[in-house]
Figure 1 (cartoon, rainbow, N blue to C red):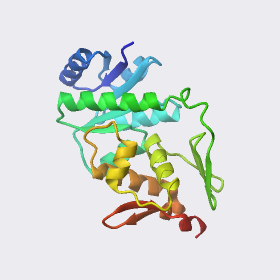
Figure 2: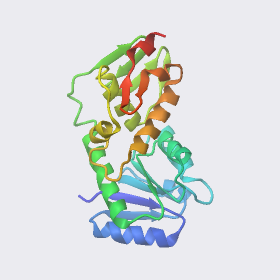
Figure 3: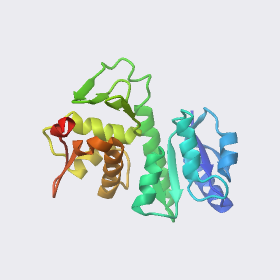
Amino acid sequence: MAAKILIVDDEQDICEILSFNLANEGYEVDTAQSAEEALAKLSPDHALILLDVMMGGMSGYKMAEQLRKDGNTVPVIFLTARDTENDMLTGFSVGGDDYISKPFSIKEVAARVKAVLKRTAQRDPNASAAAPSAVMTFGDVVIDAATKEVRIGDRPVALTRTEFELLTTLASNPSRVFSREDLIERIWQDTPFVTERTVDVHITRLRKKLGERAGLIASRSGYGYRFNTAAACE
């Protein structure tokens, strides 16, 4: 069965171009020209949303944030003419799965859609239900790989999927320094066009969410990142 995609952009030309080309790729496509219209159209059948950031009325960021607050985990790929680090941080912090800058090539969009859908399928909770639970504890920091939850003392830490995967990858190998290339191969292995900057943006956001335990993610200049267990006891 073809995956169903919802395209949300207030520029009709972009909706038509993306709809035509993604339909040619074998996807079933719906379109909306505002976040409000998209929320009304969105159904459990939609496997992914291509979401413009800057729209009249509710922005793409606000729409994604509302979806996540409502417990909707449908993958979101942001489309935007803005490409600063702060914009990327905002996109990932509200639960975005990927970020494509305008102008974009149709081949790039198709490749990213395919990669995000593949990653989502691999994260199917039904596929991992039989996996053994693994709880890692570092001082007052608890990382539960089974429930995908992180706590610092009594405080829950809300992480996106990618942030959680980064944290667990580093925490599972505390003696190892991971280069940015290592992390891309492990976490974004099926995603084209991922750069080292993408890793740094996610690490920055992860540290911010860890707050007083930001030191758990240590940088090794010229090498990459490692998990600093000593920071859990400081």
